[in-house]
Length: 627
Image (cartoon, rainbow, N blue to C red):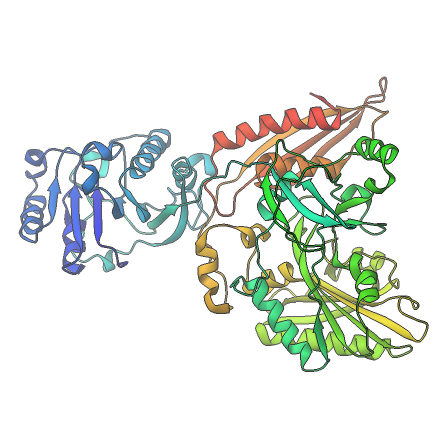
């Protein structure tokens, strides 16, 4: 039993579970056992009568005629706040089907919110297959199950644990109530589902960021998809986030081979310059405002953090038309965008610092991209960039040293990971069947075409499975400093690396505000992550529309709007059908969107509202005609 203090049991029949729990509890535990039926009716059963007497003798509060869907009506506010609520094998009675039992669960979970402690648990035991989760073996078809996780989501609960319900563990428990009769039923394969509260979805508010740019204090509106990811401080000195821990271990390892210098100069979130590998459609373009000055507090030059304050309206992104207008009014405004890689600052840093041959310079920070939705393509992640100046002709030796040290660090953090490198061009790597490469690794910003990609996979995985690329190493063309020195870069995607080392399957979990994530990494401890939200429900919606032959459909913008509207709950977008009308020349596209949250309770109703809003947004922003 978990170390709780106030326990509530609902839907008891013969009170044998209450009696068993009472016998296993310490004196500090306070138990309230309730039953839907009257005491007179229940006491007709000899076992029930004996258990009731035993419970009362032990000081247990026993209540009758308690409706578990209206719990707050039976307990005064001072007597609520239960640490754990148990409901074993709920059933509407007799031959009630799955629909009525789902309704019972829905009302029960909603009732629990009124009497459960903030960090309390709800335990629901269900017979084999009823829950409808992959934990059931065999798993029933979704429509034929009780859909317990989806029913709990309606009250803000997430499934945090599930384990077998073993009769041997509950001494003296007798399961009765088959079709509302004093008959036993089979609990072989039954599961106990443990639910906890999930964080509510935030109400997004507009945010402005203030920074210094080219000697001027400017403010800019943060694109909506990044509002909850700006200013998180994952890499701060007092952070226990695993991204920082892994970054520090990587830097420490490399400092044993190279003289190392951290680049402490703050780098602006905005960059003004040419983009080659990260295309313009993938950049988050910004038009800064030099007139707004909401704060009189001084701000450091080029600060990457700046000052945040509420804005007036949301800004999804600056489209091509806005950039053209900006170009007409002021040439300087056209090319400002949120930094897509720390590589864009290398030349500036080289000019400001004294680059001695052999010294490894380190830059770390978050970078931002617009990209398609996929499990390992990250719109925001933390990059660490190692830059080393070497004598011309020795670049290969430096690359080898960097590769060896990075691979050794990864292997020391998780020996079961196989770390390897692939010598390839960007184009060859993207088409390779050996690794999975995306723009979340390293953009090709006028670097040598041949790069060394840092890849990893577990040694227990299929030998034919692709490795996951977490970084790249390359030499830059000569001349960045002088003709005698060359530059070697190593870029590491810390988020992808952290996911691999800690066994985190969903990149969104790195950004959760739920304390149960960071509590697993207190003091910089690294270990396998245990998810606190198991088998979250998923919902599927389709959308189809016409695209004019005069318009070029922007699929990245389509995905970006889905991110914004769904608050990052769209996990997959799949093109189902494409058709061109022979007379009008219009193209019909049909996409399937899959919604699922990794850390919050997501309901069918919420998704339906998101889908409606998504249809409005794509019609307005992408100039398509809905079908």
